[in-house]
Amino acid sequence: MARAFEDKNIAIAQLPVAPVLARIAGGQRKHGVDCGPEALWPDAARELIRELNMDDASLTDISENGVGLMPALARLAGEIERLARAGRRPLTLGGDHSIALSTIEGMLRVHPDLRIVFIDAHGDINTPASSLTGSLHGMPLAAHLGLFGERELPGVGFVGARLRPNQLALIGVRDLDPAEATFIDDRNIVCYTTDDVKAHGMTAVIEQALKQIDPMGRFPIHVSFDVDAADPAIAPATGSLVERGLGQDDLDALAAHLAATGRVAGLDLAEVNPALAKDEAALEATVHTALSFAAACLS
Ligand SMILES: [Mn+2]
Image 1 (cartoon, rainbow, N blue to C red):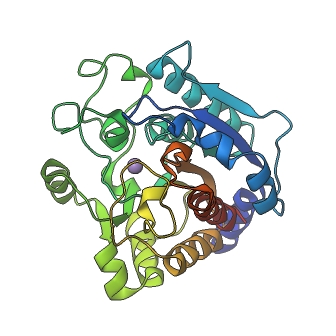
Image 2 (cartoon, rainbow, N blue to C red):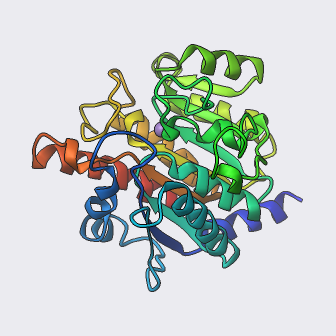
């Protein structure tokens, strides 16, 4: 049996990576995050991920311009589903983190047993009722868990609410709203803060998290990386900065461990916002932090 799982794992890691540009900013209020894909693609990405088995012959490019946020997100979900069914590993370059509504939805349609490693300073598990800002980029996980749907937020009905709490691990959290903290506690959602990482080390944290959500090490993993999980020193160009974030060593250890599972089936880079970089170096650092993490996870 172990051999069969190993072979299946090798197969996932060998699937070609398919880049998806998601020019989505309507999930929050600051200008510029829809230009994240411009910053992440193509030069920097080609440089950093040239070692990967990349299928960029038919680049997927989705914008909310002209169609609106919800229709663009619904289309993005369909594209992610199509790529996953075609044996590709979607690498989605956002865009704000509302893209996780679509990426996780598309992946779950193909892999119902998918595990989610959600790396973020925030919980992103608010409902329209609990949210203090009303911004969709703070709600994707609540939609996947079925806490709200089309009735509460018209247009979100493309999300099938398929995710069970035990399929999800949060890493790098340090800014939870009270309602989010209560929900995470009540549903026993696996959640490791940056304090946990400082106390135990990232390797111990990710080992433990994967053991909790996938004890047998069997299921495909989708990694959703909000660049605000990283410390502002290495990722300053983003809209919701929170101090005391994950350092480069933490991110390196996390990516190495995820890659070593051989089961990373898809990855998101969210919230890189070129308009919020105070200078060229700030944007370069942020892009490098995001892309080097992606490349290491998918290698
Ligand atoms: Mn986020």
